[in-house]
Length: 333
Image (cartoon, rainbow, N blue to C red; front, side):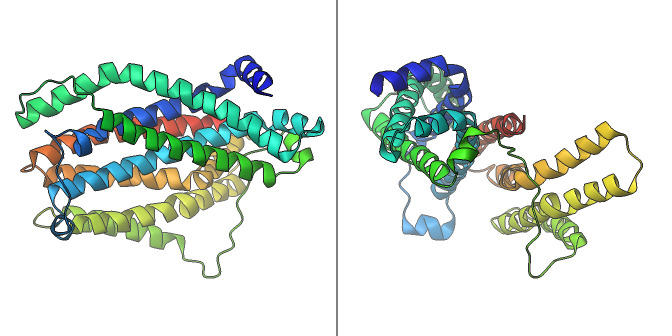
């Protein structure tokens, strides 16, 4: 089983590229931001008073959690794509008489090998990315220390993250096998499907537009920038969720029904509406990144550590979100 699983992984290696890129990106970004926790020249211990005061160290921790959430969404998209590509392979193994436990063991071997490859790539890249990252942070914060900082505790925490990611990936694969019959694994499946509206209380679509612009107004008209703008940002983000999940798809579908469009235009608009409904969580992350991060950047001008961390975080989050969009298009393709 071990030899066969590794041989199949090598034969179908092109199918794992997207997942490896997602894992390497996640581990690489988390490895950089772990410096704000482990590196003695950057780390600040978060206390209960810091939480109450919404201090600089607490904000950095929250930003790290948000980046981790975005990275997890990227891995979920990539893993979903990976499972769809390997569905027929798993179905054939079950047809050959392999038990559920052996199929899971087969996947576990392949996933562990993928994680090992990802860890090796991440560690090699860290010898380049870490000095660049620390050079930027140290120069901005006027810290005169070596930029070649590699600590055992840093890689220990990275190992814990690797185990958590591996557990999530295996759990997703087991759930996918259990929720799909043998026939559905063998045949080709359409991933993008129409979503039916099962809401008991239907909110008019224009309410989402009002809520979105109300959030923008509350954010940018106030006299000073503080944590209250985060609440306004969340109002706008929730409204953006409804805007992209209900208003725009409904409008596009009405255009398809009412306008005399060409066949290719009808297909494109219909697929765009479905894409928005399928990618609602990704769209919310994009809206939060676009609205929240610039607000916090402006409000943290007098906190150098948080200010530079937010700038770097903005670049990395947008990079991850771009990869998520590409993964989403790969699934649809």
